[in-house]
Length: 558
Image 1 (cartoon, one colour):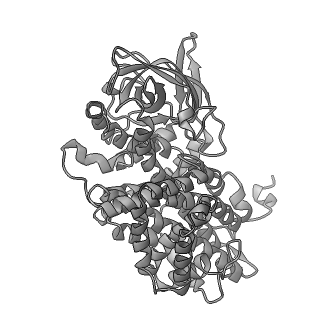
Image 2 (cartoon, rainbow, N blue to C red):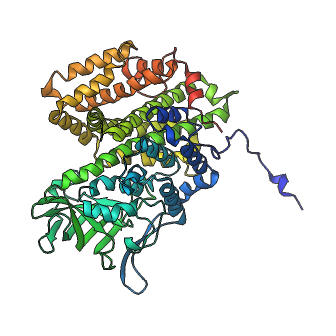
């Protein structure tokens, strides 16, 4: 018989090894430096351990599985009873358990257990874990993010907070579909948008009728629909509905206090471009029970507190996915040989990769500077002002830059990047959601302007930080002067707000890079993002940029 070897036509060579079994924290110089600078250094050992754990081949493959075997809606059981359940692949639950154990769902609120002061750097430390976990799998991060962000909204209603917040702060993930009081730990979702309103939540038609006299903490019956209702298997949700006193915020549990399933009817799961492991749904409430948070008519204010936190998560998660996209590209090009050279040694490819690395470092430092303001806003009014202005700025710019970066990084991998076996395609599909969710680009720009109208002194705080880097780079100084000139014409601010917010983001990142990053990073960044020595696409760094040093800084180390 002819041996199989006789039919072998080729051997596999000139392919990179898989990027796995590495530490996502210690291998990322920009991240580790940023976390130390922004106040999260006390968590370094825990973050390093988490980075090693989720960088294993086994955990990385959980992300693939969760996006291959998608959630399935089970509206009825086999006997015809309505059950409204979503089934997830075990990999999804394993990822959720890892994130909950790390405290990504609420660790900054641990001080509420005993009434102590918030732990220094807690927000930065949590988001460093989020930044890494998003690189493994982003979809399950939706309920993780919403659970963390639900806490400040719940605090508007102390009696509800006393009941629900301790359940949130558990580090045990409990996937069972049972009443919250029977579970080891819980998660939260939210329901705001409707078909006819979208961003304009004041146009919502869902109604809430009080049971008895109603009022703060009181029970209501909620009837209506929600066009996007993410993570419908969470244990409770914050929803908006029209009460007699106006648009209001309610806590709606999956089970009523007597242990009956609440009247939440899942109509369908959304077929989305990305974020596919997360079961976003469309639902109807059929006189579902909900409890009022705060006063009637204050719903937007209350739930906006939740949105403020989720917007920061959007920026950090986008920066994390940018990091993974660039890490994959740099790793691939470090091993792949084309025309007798490693791809990373080809001048044009080196230019592209270095340009992508600069963009990612800028997104990282900007996002975590905003995270630091969350850690200090409760005691420092300047930091609170910075948070109000720069959260929508960072959310706008980082999330807008991410999709094109993901595409360019995918192209660096060639055909290997365009097939589903790898992670590049999943990252690319995932990127747009953070720009759309929790306020699209125009909403973010208008939020910046509204905040400045309400608190004009906040702009002085932001400019003071920008001014702290003046004199370090001529292009930076010119961009700062131009931004100040733009604010001298109030009549044109709204029409030009995208341009203005873009420059604010670039200057904020530039100030940090000038003060803290190596000179080879800051000079290239300012020449391109704030000067005129740059093209419309990545890969147009000026000739004097030290691309080799930038790439060495960005290369993930085993």
